[in-house]
Length: 322
Image (cartoon, rainbow, N blue to C red; front, side, top):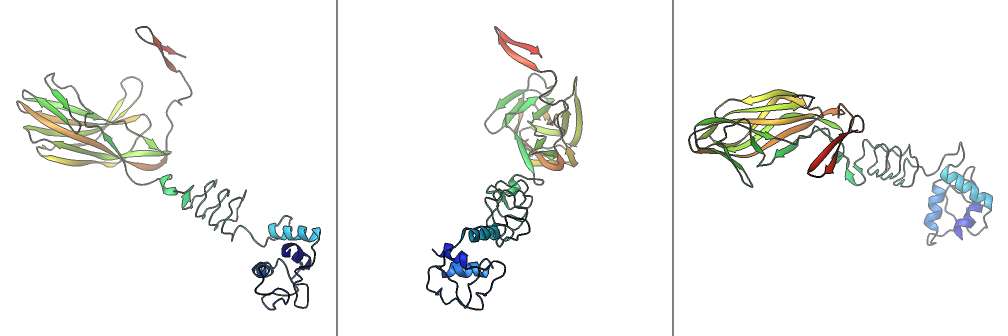
């Protein structure tokens, strides 16, 4: 075969005959091996055997095969590989490919910063995709995060007992039979971090209908911190204009406020009721953004410290502390 016989004809120290300058008389252009011979000689892997010939049918020796393998893969020190990962289109099986910066695919590359795909890359900071999924979907450091409170998430915050809540699929109707002022609250399951990024609060959007003889007298945004005892509360922003319209309004804080892991956000709405009036509260939406800082850990790691265990017992639950 040509692959075996051609090896014996090559001169590995330096090609004796340049294929670009001289055609081999014993390898015709119509030969099925013509392209292979041209590529091997063009890459300086092999050369002719002299007098314009390639000697394609000369038997190869095992030492010739060993030298060819060494030149192809740079198996020994000081040997430069003819084909290397830096210019390779694919390096899918490379254990390490520090020179694969411009590889089109480097699935197992340790370092493939500019690889178009790097499914198993340890470091791929500038790769266009990670495992076929856009890297931006994993490494978000910008853009808004929106968290909505359910339409039936409004509750009474110290209101008169005559306040009536009617929960619907798309809104909460709060009504009063007598003239009064009521403070309502919407609480959120507030994410304080996402994908390792600390989140910051930008503001809140509130949607309402205050056209039924009950108007909004104030809107306040508070951040609550969970600490032992009564905890803490921080007022961030408010609107004290009277609202008797139907709208969605966005209330922004003066500057993004970072949320520690044990914080939550509440929106308070003050409502002035006339006799037999009501207000419809449709939704409230938190507007958050990554702060650019790493997520802060909880004050007590979840895997350490006292652990309260719930055990079912007859008639209720038994709390035990380990």
